[in-house]
Length: 210
Image (cartoon, rainbow, N blue to C red; front, side, top):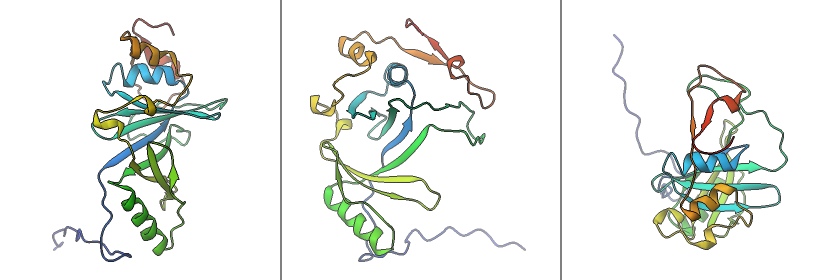
């Protein structure tokens, strides 16, 4: 007779003082878009996930949308010629490009340093703390090759107190100006039956030119 499954002990082994990291949820899931303007129109305008922060460098834009204390964030890489694939959930496709990295949230800077020590004690390679202004992070890799980040908001844009210093893109996409003016034109999307590279066919305009 098969034995009943046993729930695993929630107390895992620890390398540092027997104390677990102070995880406080997902900081942000970083995805990739080839059209940030369209992304703002959907996530802010349709999903109702407020655009709370923007970052810009010579190489990319990085925009953050609040989904209830955590963020879904998108990179738009300048000059990148990449094939984007749309697919249903649970259908694998080796071409899928849109995922970038996963960031977990920590409550304060001390917790970031404690996690760094913990990772190093296990033999895991980890970066120094990187100061992004309103966000401080460390970076490492999980065994599946997933790029990982652990972050602390120095000034949390999801708290309802987002301010001008959270918006660091000096040349934002047109949709941001429409948000400021209160006249954002959203876009809508269609379901797909299987993997497809015809991305232009899965979204429709709602008062905005394609």
